[in-house]
Image (cartoon, rainbow, N blue to C red; front, side, top):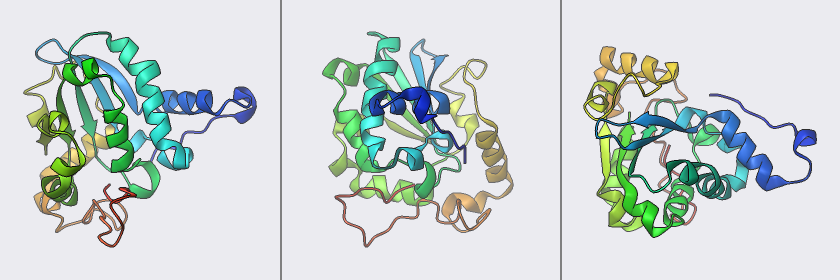
Length: 215
């Protein structure tokens, strides 16, 4: 987990600005060059997202950061999203499906149309099951149909220029571990008790209203 904090004295009493600064410093969401078709790439590193620090403001922070920082940088270009789920933990750095859904739905129609693909790198078994069973109900077809799972980085390179996409060490390490221990893909084998075994940690007793059950 990457811990990022903001000095409240430096930010004064403006919570919206503090949230934007927190996300900017975390580098959880960055623009990373272009894909193999020349489209802008938005890289999201789950392990970097400061969900715990944001608390109940994760949804508002996501929406604000997309509107104020990401979309202006993209302009009117087509773009793709690469989400790296490697070693993301529900309690520490996953904002919740509800926040992700709300952030997507808040995008203007032009931005939704310009989003061409969402590459989900290192999906856990429970994540796959969750989206396979409930994804179409929770997300519009415009997003769900663009979702592509990348179980290994080697599959991602068919769509990306690997020289232009920065891959954090935690993602590369996890990829190597999956190569050595392929049963981890099926939730059968774990690296430790916290992050990999049955990694989505889906709480089936929780209501769908909270939608904080997948990591």
